[in-house]
Each structure stands twice: as structure tokens, then as C-alpha cells.
Image 1 (cartoon, each protein chain N blue to C red):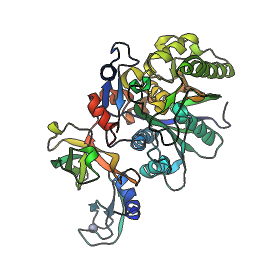
Image 2 (image 1 turned 120 degrees about the horizontal axis):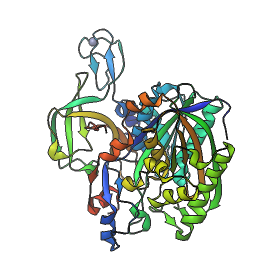
Image 3 (image 1 turned 180 degrees about the horizontal axis):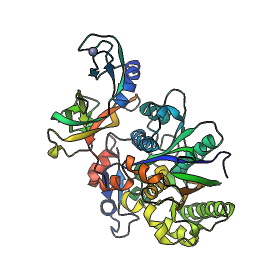
Length: 347
Length: 133
Ligand SMILES: [Zn+2]
């Protein structure tokens, strides 16, 4: 898919909470092997943080990099499955915080781990059709895994925000995008439940790998490229292994995946995952580099995006903290504090 | 506090939005309708930059109801770059290593919530300046 107007990424911003719990600690509590864990550690939101506060800081960082007035934004769209309110948009709070109200389209988007990139496709269309000069899309989650469940090891918190705008003056030109969706019941959470359920045998091949590889191949075909023609490739990161395995299937060198691979240090930030990976790549990429980003959301689907970095990136990236700074700001907590912060103890 | 009052105050609380006196240039937080210095009513909105230093602080170990989820926490007087002093919680910090004069920056956080079913109140807090890598 392409837009009518030439557009690009005008600003981007990240946020990761500072608390970390080691996977070996979670394994110890539940009597599992601390050596056989999916990631080293995962981020945990502080007691006064939620998807809304994370979205606010990531969006503010994006606005600093875009260096535009918040009044010029046409959308504030927040993709998340951890809305603080079941009914009441997170996006209106973010928009008010940024100073983007009231001439704005604000909404929360939902599609498991690809809610953020879904919103990004929308922002691309909004700007690409001329409905707005700039559009903000955020992917954020404070994911919860049921205690002792396999997902508890990776369910983490973080988010990233992107401002799409005209190609002229952008940090990365938009080349094209594609969405691949099927009805696949690999992961779900019913209304009023605290924790999600998943169908283990579904999560690998028919879900993650099928959607990621199909989305990647189709977009590459449309752009007449091979996946390995890219300088950086980001895949959704439910753990440390899956993105590397997807790269292998698609013939992508692993050196191209590693700069955007942050799940080993902070876990799976769900709707934040691929977008935080893309932010980490924008922190280091050089002008003219080609970047491919492919999300995955259970339910299921993948969004694939192709960008070409411009020389504007060099100055813009300095205007806000990079992903590395947030990853380095780390305070380890034990399972007891984690249980308190994540409200796993119900009184 | 009532929902309408939270709503009226939300903008200034989310963003540290104050007022500036057009005649004597004095800045105010919270925003005022009459200048505290020259009594002028000719004021405009002023967006504070959100950077400052801890002027003084205390550790709250027995917070009022609704604030216990952050216990214990630091409540501080923060002297903003612009010279004004505001009261705020310090978050994301090691309470044993807080110091008077420590540079801090503004963030938005959950201040409190009215139980499981009421509104969530967001507002500014400060944190130690994020080290850049
Ligand atoms: Zn005055």
C-alpha cells in the first residue's frame, strides 16, 4: 500500500519504566528452571504508572523530535490492550496533556500486540490522504501475565509514539506498508478477566511466523525488494528467540535484527514492542539506510512498514532521550515488590 | 474532591500550566486571575519548562487514603528554573539518596484513584533527571 501524498516519520519517542524483574526470579518462585527462560529480565511499571502515563511521555518525546506545535496534530491515536479505563479513551488524556485539544481526532485502538502499528497505518493514511498535516500514533502496554503462566516471564511495560508528517523535513521517508490478517484464536482475554489465555500450540507457526513472513514477503514484493536488502529489520518481540527465527526463515542476516531487538532486556511490551524496536533503530541508523518493521498481534495479524532514513535524523534524535537511556535506567525488584506493583495481591 | 473540579484543574495539573502577568512579568503556579505581585488582571497562560531543583523535601510514610499505593514517597518543594516554587511528589527515585538541590524534571503520573470504580486522577510529579546514554 502507498499514500497519495509523500509522507514520512516526522518524530518518534520512546518510554520504558525503570523497574526490572529477572526471569530467573520468576522461575525460582514457581519452581521452574531459572536457566531456561525466554528473556533475561522484563520491565515493570511503577505504582504510579499505567498505559496512559507511558503514552504521554513517549508522545512528548515524539513531539520534541518533530519540533512542531501540538496544535498541528490531526490525531492522537493510542493502541493498547491495557487501557486504564474499560470505557473512556486513553487518547483524550494524552491529547490534553500534549496540548493538542480540541481540534483533534482522538481514539484508542485495539488489536493485541499490533494495536500500535494498526494506529500507525491509520496515521499514515490520515496524513497520506491530506486529512491532516501531522498525525500521532502510539503503541503502549503494561501487559499482565497470570502468575506462573508462561507469559508471566515476558509480559512487560513500555511504549513508543510516532508522528507522521510530510516527507519533506521528515526523519525517515515512508516507502510503503501492508497488513496481513486472519482469524486465529492464539491469545485472548474476556471482559472482566484480569489475565489473558492462550492456545500454546497456536502461538508459533500458524500465528506469529505465518503472519510475520506473509506480511514481510508481500510488502517486499510490492517494493521489488528482498527482506535482506534492508539495513535494519524489526520484528515483533514476544521473546528473544522468535524474531531471530523469523529473520532466518526470511533470509535476513541476524546483525540487521540485533540493533532493534530489545526484548532480552525489557521483555515483551506488546503494542509497544515493534515500535520500541523501530525507535531503537532510529536512534542509530544513518541517512539512506533502509528499515523494515513488521509487527504481530494475536487474533491475528501483522503490519509491515518500509522506511528510508533521511539526514534530518541526526539532529532530531538528540532532542529526546533514546531507547538505550531508558533501558539503562534500571532498578531491580524482587517478586514480592513486583507482585505489589502489578496488583497481583488482591485484598 | 468532585469530578467537575478535577476536570476544571486537569489541564494545568497535567502540564504544569501557569499564568504570567503581562504588566510585571511575574509567573504563577497554580494559575491566578489576579497577579500576586502587582494586582493586575491582565494575565496570560504560561507553560513552565518543567525543570528545577529540590528546594526541600520530606518522606511521607503515613499518606492519606488514596495515596497508599505509592507509600513511602517523597513530597518536595521544587524550585523551577523560572524561580517559582511548586509542591509535588518525587517519583522514580531512591528515597535514601534524595538531596536538596538535586536536579529534577516534570513527568505525568497517577496521583490517586477513587477506589476501583472511580476516576483516576493524573498530574505532575518530578523525577531525578534521566541520564542520557
Ligand atoms: Zn503583575
